[in-house]
Image (cartoon, rainbow, N blue to C red; front, top):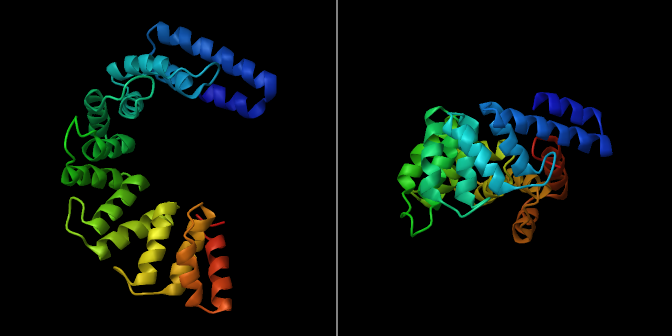
Length: 249
């Protein structure tokens, strides 16, 4: 795939499409000859429509071939597709062994997806086990998963699987907000405005609100409330600060 990416940056239009098609054909031949990495890459190509038509069902076939041969990333992608019902029926139980394998290998996404296994499985499959989900989210967060960091903050805020702790929630959510998560940013803004888990600070709240707004999260009522509590100069400074930091405009 590295050779493909280099060419894709260098070419455009018809030439780019032809290179992608040629690469897919070559990758398919390698996968059919038993190359595990090629099977993984071919699955991604079918999943994303690179070098030809998108075919999620065919993507599952090649990702399964690679995953069954021990390919960690293929195990993650196959597990996620099975959970989401991409390329076939959603099947949480079938996804679990693949995700567990990836999680055992320390894969960040595999660890996070294992948390989702215990939080988002359909009721007919299993009841939610939020405390177990937290176990997996903590491991994913330790590997750098911002999605997991956000989940830990939200669950701590709501008391899901753990006693509600606004201070703990704020620490997790602030970390996710600083990494650019817009949902975390607007929750942090709200917590700062309300003094929930942190000292009340409308100006700091406005900074986080503007950062969230730049990322598509809008709450008109919150914005009006915050603007009532700061001066015009403070509001301008907050906007400039938000725009200058990661996750801003």
